Amino acid sequence: FYLPLSGSTFKKVYYDDLLGRAVSKFVPADDLVVPYTATSLDDAEAVVHVLKISENDLRKQQVAGFYSDIELTKPQGTITNELKEKEREVEGITKSQRVEPMYTVLECHVNLDLEGFEDVGADGEPTGIKLPYIVTVEEGSRKVLSIRRNFAPNDPKKIKIQYFVHFKFLPGLGFYGLGLIHMIGGLSRTATAALRQLLDAGTLSNLPAGFKQRGVRVKDDAANIQPGEFKDVDTPGGNLKDAFVFLPYKEPSQTLLQLMGIVVQAGQRFASIADMQVGDGNQQAAVGTTVALLERGSRVMSAIHKRLYVSLKQEFKLLAKLFATYLPPEYPYDVIG
Image (cartoon, rainbow, N blue to C red; front, side, top):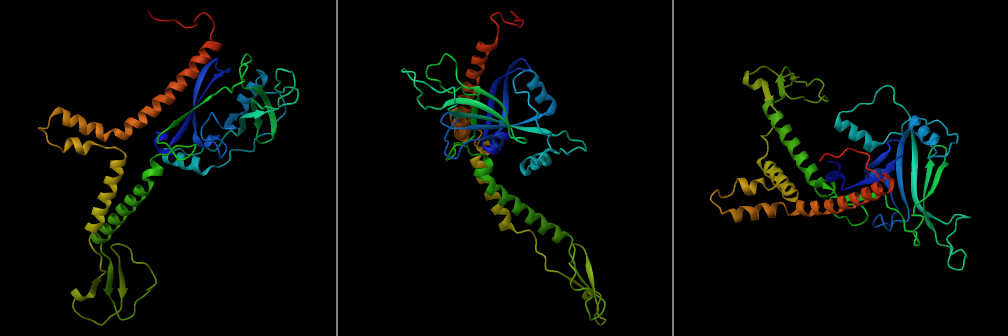
């Protein structure tokens, strides 16, 4: 559900030492930072994964030797993120009184020319070429937790090992993809505003407000008039029907209703909702005609599915490499059959 909204999501495929198995972890777009000039994960000079780790899990990694056993400052607490807060509000999640502070760890996939570990040529002299490394830094204390090479030891070309897979909903103009919020977010806001105006007009029309007679002088004329409310007005005596004056509220506008329908239909056409084409069509139509309508309506979704299949293929390839590297020669699980 996150992918159609944001347009880009990521999967990180790696071997988890604490779990003892391969993991394919979902990574939202705001937790993966790339350079401004990057066009893909393969040509990005640096990829930074922002990790939130509890104090206990970080200590486990230090004891296991994955991270350096150094003293770190205590986390001050969770940093409020407007996007995260809005997501929790939509999900109906409220923050509890006691929230365990989390460490913010920056896992940087970068190219470095480290002293003592330089790339050397055939003559044994340093070439000055930067090699791929993974540098992990704790953000609060700004201390380096680990530096690991990010290429196979027997690889003569020292090609960077890729851990991330990019899933795109629609191709964007740069690194990130486009989602429904980018494409039809304006239509959604327009339809919502029109619907609210129609509801307000209907409410005011059903519960009219105005003035009632009680003299010449209007008391508290600066106050707002609420639906169904009549303000006292001092005026000379007269007929009872003349004692009430209704404000000129109109019925909900049919033009605004038609405009809202046009906006909603435009959003449905972009989102490839083809139920109207099939359900309201000729029931005596041939099978080929009905299939053609379905295929035309799902053209955009078919292209999206093809992109997702390509990304899923890359994810399975990374998992296969992990299985070949970390699984023992004898399969550790029971196989039925």
